[in-house]
Amino acid sequence: MPRAAEDPLVRSARREAAVVLVIWAVALIYSVGYCWFFGYGREAAELTFVWGIPGWVMWGVFAPWVACYLISLWFSYGFMTDAELGEEQMPPSEAATAGEAPDA
Figure 1 (cartoon, one colour):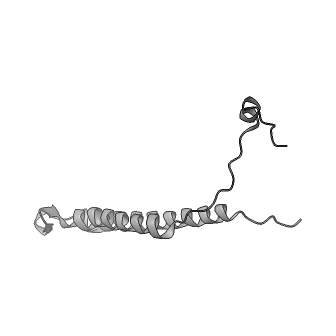
Figure 2: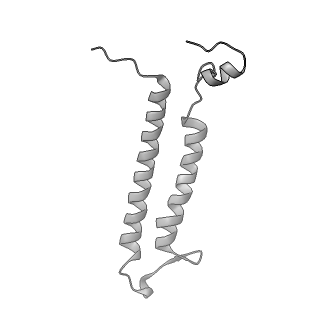
Figure 3: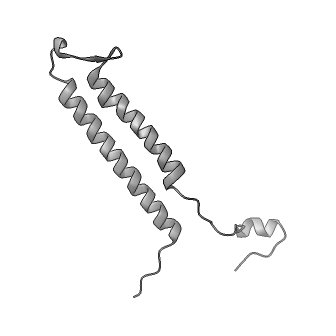
């Protein structure tokens, strides 16, 4: 049985979802890993501060947030593309009330 050609919109949506999933996974692994190794089990005297914030919070939480924000800007304005969805079709129930013959 021959396989039907995949709709380009579905292919594009699948690609965009895969990119989002990879970005999310990398951010999760980095953030949790960094905070685990540099935030827990340390003495208070060993803590370093960046602008009054503990260094592990700055580099393990705030820095990934800023990076994800910048990546989301690139993703939404540079990677995602608009695609023509085709001509809008009226549902048969609305076509009947509008006085038009429904498409068969």
